[in-house]
Each structure stands twice: as C-alpha cells, then as structure tokens.
Length: 529
Image (cartoon, rainbow, N blue to C red; front, side):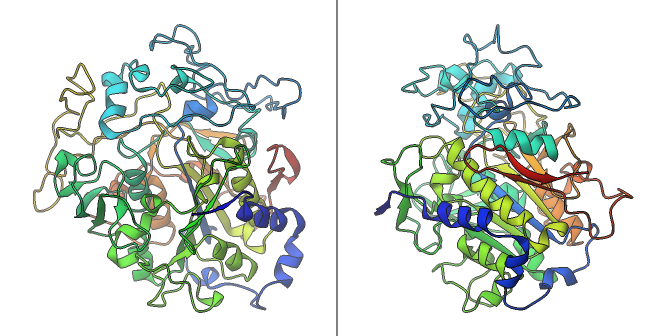
C-alpha cells in the first residue's frame, strides 16, 4: 500500500467547497447551461437525488440526547431552536439511567473520536435484541481502550457530530428508519440500491457467514467482496442476480452514477486526521453496491473517456466512477439525475478506521459544494448509513420479514452459539420460493433529507427502511418496481420529509442553504425561510 498521511480528497473538497462560489462554479464548467437531468420528467421538483451512504452508526449512537448537548468549554457549542421537535432517543425514553443492559450509556467526548469496531454480524445483532428486550448488547461489545467494556452503549452529542445536529435543525431527519435486514455492510449496500439481499451466489470460497445457512446461494447476510471486481481480495466473493435501481434507470434512459472513494486506484490509502498513523485502503470492495450485479459492474474500474459521459450509458463504465468525478460532473453542469456517493474509507465514519470528525469533513464539504452550485435548487441529498455497527439502539423495528435459517438468533436462543429463529419464513416470490435469511427490519439507523424542498427542523416518525431510498427514486422518475420481493414495494415513503406544496416558492424551489464549517460543524452562513 501507498500510505498518504494527508487526506488529499478532503483537501480538494475543502478547497472547492470553501473557496468556490456558485458563480465561478459555472465559469469552470464546459459551457453547457444545463445538464440532461433537467430534461427528464419527474413527479416532484427534484431533478437530482444524491445519496450519501456512510458506515456503521445507530440512531442512538449519534442522537441519544438530541437536541441537548453538554457543551464543554473549548468544544463546538450546540444550542437547539426552541421549537425543536421531540425525538425517540435514550434521553426521551429515560434509558440514560437504569438501562436494561446492566450499564448506563455514557457520552463520548470529542477528544475521543477513535473507537473500536463493534460486533455487527447478522445473528449476533439479533441476539443483542433478545426478542425486543434490547438487553444483550454487552454480550457482544468490543473492549475499547478508552471507553472500556461497555462502549457499545455509548453515544456522541452535538459537540462532536455537530454538523448532523445542525442539519437536523434546518432540514428533515427520521427517528424511525431501519436497516431493511440485520447484518453488516454488504447487506446494507444491497438494500439501499435494490431492497433485496436474496439472489447471492458464491464465486469464491464458502458461503458460511456470508450466505444464509452457509449455502452457496440464497440471501446475503455477511460481508463478501464482489466476484467480478478486479480489486476484490477477500476469501469469499459473491455476485447477485436480479435487478437494482441502476437497471431501472438504464431502462428509462436516465443518467446516474455510483461514485466511490478510491475507485480509480484501489491500492491507495489514507489515514484519518485524528489518527495519522492508522492508514486504511480508500476503496473497500464489500461496500461497492453496484459491483455485485453483472449489469452494473465496472470490473476493471475503467474511467469514462470524457467528463461529458459521466452518468451516461457508454458500454464501458457501467455508471461506476471514482468519487472525484462527482465533483467534476458538478463543476461541468452534467450532474447525473441520481448519484450514490461513498467516501474514502478514512472519511466514511466506520468505527475502527474512521471517526465522526473525519466523516463530518466529508459530509460538510460535499454538501457545501452542492449548495453553492446552480443545481442546488432542484437537488435532494439523502444521508444514511449501511448498518448500525452493533452500537446500542433502544428501538426494535417491526419484523416484516421472518426467517428461520441456522444463522437467526432473534428468538429462542440463550447464547450466541445456539440456534434460534426470527419467526417462520414464508413464500414470497411468484415461483413460490422461500426467500429465507432476510430477518428484518434490523437496527435503527439515522436518515436525513437535505434540500431546498425539505421541511425545516422536522422529525419524521413514519416507519422507513433502506429501501425507502429506492422507492423515492422509483416514484420520482416513474420507474416502476424492482420486483422479486424487493422491499421497495412496501417501503415507507420519504415524501413526508419534503414540502412540495409551499406556495412561497416558485416552480424551481428557493435557494435555502446552510453552509457549515467542516472542522467544527458549526454554521457559517445560511439562507432560510
């Protein structure tokens, strides 16, 4: 590996976001006044959806005391608006004391952003839930060097995840959004683009811990690299059958792209700014959503032959790009209609090799750049995470998919090693096949909608899951459904987080912005109603 001590992508984004105005963004472009996304008919004023998909956070881990921050001296202060709505969190539920796990959650100070990586396996997460009692989290907690053996219960507040708390104050977030299934990164990556983990097949190695029941095909429950990716190196590799949202967009001729940090050079690595000696490879193959499907994989990570082709079907890239090309498209005013973004690993927020402060730098710089662009008035940014990392969350979502594979542990088990179940699987698809191994909904995960059209200081309590992102895209561009028991068909809608009937706005929306400092997460400037 080539270790780079500075975060080069961070530096480029910061320079772009803080030194560039909307006017010179246009001047740097290729002369086109509009991009093709403006021409696609949509059900809403939204012409660009940007999904920022981060790593490993439960709702309570970031919002356990929202909107009340401790505000120690010398740390970024957070003071909530008087009309901030109540959220369902540790504080409002009285679980900061007398917690059923045998220890009480503790605030993690901003001075300790680097934590250990919790256990977030498919069955182990279910075991922690204990049929809804939510009292077995300490049985799978890592022993953190600073926080100790009960770190799995602990949380950050608005002095560390300041940007996210400020986005919540000015836009919309959900406190009732769940992983579509239990499990780690790969199932989450599949659910946010396909609403589906069934259809996985091993191309290398064993399915044990990766495919339900340890089979060679079936529902994906664990991390494995995509079988066709030139950068894949894990002992187990898989591919997926069926469709994802990219297939529906291709069929409709709508521009889109998956933009991943490190895609251009999968040997490059960076270290988080908070821990300069802990470098990790920028590109993580088992986070690469679209690389699991033959129809949307860019096997050799081939770049487009021209910046003007970003988002378009060219028979070469299959819409998969390096993250840097997202900024190129934004500058050149050919931003695709739909973009999925994945940060370089050091900035994706994953405990163990990233942290909330480096994650904040990526989020803020990306959103600042979007807000300073001509495209902002027609854009919706959706921020969410792939899984909970196993961090404690006190809410159990509805079990809409039952399962009884040997990996299930939600019910009927007294230990991590004994076999349990998640109810009884039922036949779902038209052939009558049982899509077993999709126990869910899984853990509660934050979700934000940041847009000129988002409601302000709003908390949505409707039940949502990762496939709600897929459904919003499908509905906005009239794409239809993925089928084959994808969760898109039944997913709660994101519509309640928007206000498309605001009579004070013209048909293009207003320019409501919130420019934040990427280091502190505090407000620099903003234009609000």
